[in-house]
Image (cartoon, one colour):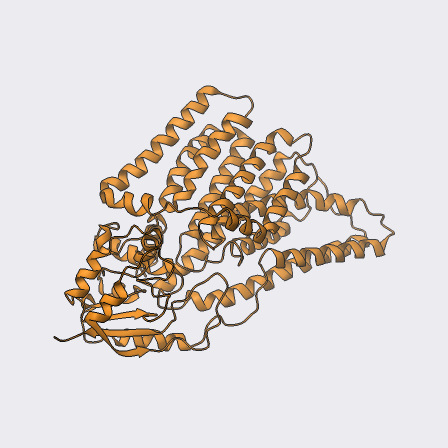
Length: 531
């Protein structure tokens, strides 16, 4: 066990560590300040997923099928695991319909993932067989925890953590999956292996892509485990397949073929190789620290044990980068970037005491120089990892005026007769599942496979006494987007059957945050034409 010497020349390094911790706390404080404006906001109109997220909770509350025929236009392309768990936790806390609490719970998922990342980091160092440890491991754990929370909420690969999206729980499940792999490599415990057969199927219920952990585990057992066991490999493959089948089968029994349509058919998107390469350049800092961590930890004694774990991370990271090419966002790379941070911190945990122990006690200037350079480099790295934010409000108070004006359109009328394109908070209060939600049109429109006849029929029948839509005359109109391969004709038909009586002004003083989309645009209030 290595202990810091008592000599004064170690003071620069101790001060450097405390300085980094202070910087981390400052960056976390700025994040909490900015995120708090989102978290406490009463309406689910941040990000495309929020409206569907709350809609799924609403369906679960009233006993309505979470997935129904596409003609209803009120289902989402995400599995409901995050929504159901979030609702359960909110219900246990006595506030089952409070949207700000839903968002706060997403941040809690990130906090738990950060704690598990510290556990993974320590286990990796132990597997490496290092006999050198920090005397102040508790302080170092706090520094690591702060670092991992910043990674979990960074604005490059994890920009949606404080919004209603499945990314936060998907991140937690991925860290649990990685932790199980690290534990199994360290202990060869059969109970850990049993949990490894379950976690991919459970992850699938949160986000379809998390099923990748099943083949990743299988690849590790087939290629890297020593001694190899064919019977163990066969058992793992069989039980993993069975658990996945149980989850998919249960979903099919609950929601039938509609589930397969929304989750499997619509989840298939073409990938742009050029966009994937661009995303690799955008996240190069996480790729670099993952590579560096592997290089520093893969030494002779630990090479055989750690190589397989590191290769699994590398494959996962590159696969996430590749699949991110289906869209313009980088949140697909969130789990891989978090695990890259684990490798980096584990390497630093092992290297740091060796660096400071090699100095001459009389060389004070060299000690201060090394400590200063180290702090500066970490500060630059923090910026490259997306930790640094400007401490300013992300949107103005005018957003609350915007919400009140939307709510005013529902006063004195049944919400069943008023269609709001995006946002479910009003319907959640009243327990009304509304058809023809705007987000449900997006993926089908882009894929050119949507059947929008149900909405067109309801427009012609003047089913709604009032319709509130954003960007009616804009190419960004959510029901007939300019990027769709063919027009839905909904704008034309809507204007034939309805007319605009007033507008709700867009939110003024909005400061768009990179990676987050606000539905703060101007709203047209439409009512049926009288023949």
